[in-house]
Length: 259
Image (tube, rainbow, N blue to C red; front, side, top):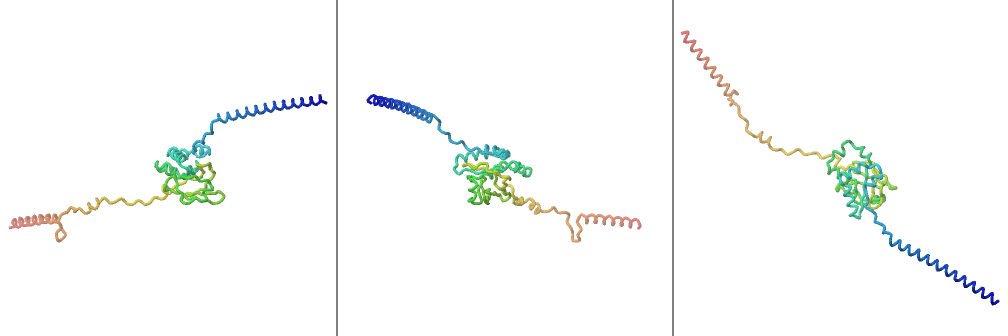
């Protein structure tokens, strides 16, 4: 019995030693894994902040805004937008006419504008604030644009259906190309024409008189031959007087011959 008890004690001790060894190995492995993970987390670079918003990249991805992209660069409005996006917390909203929208304009509509007018036309499609579709429900009209006094009227209908009007052109806002702050970009199927550039021109007033015609009319007229009371001028009277003298002379000569 004593032998059996000793054997049992030895077996149990052996088991305890094996278990202790296993636990030691487990904790060593766990410590190694933790150390490696900590080292990797310390060595990993911090995530870089998001880069600046690129309007032309959004338009290029849309695939049908070549004319608008060209105008953004030629007028340098693309640079103005980039600067404002980086310096303002209000964000911006862009209405992007498609290439078909520009092609539907009359020939010369864009090319006949001056450089400054082209700048104003492009700025007219930009709002100096970020609006997602839901924000248009509470927008106050008229809505100021980047073109200053050139304003728009924006109407929220229902179910995120929104119309934008210039007073000359009205079109729905279609296909949001981007609604991530700070830049919202919406496709429109018509070019937004501001009345200040394309509306009826006020009648031009006549140029002020130079006074030349008045001076000419008031100058004394050159006088012709004086007219006598009988309405005959002195030149005619002199001719008749000479003729009368000739007749009298001939009569006197004839009378002398006859006598």
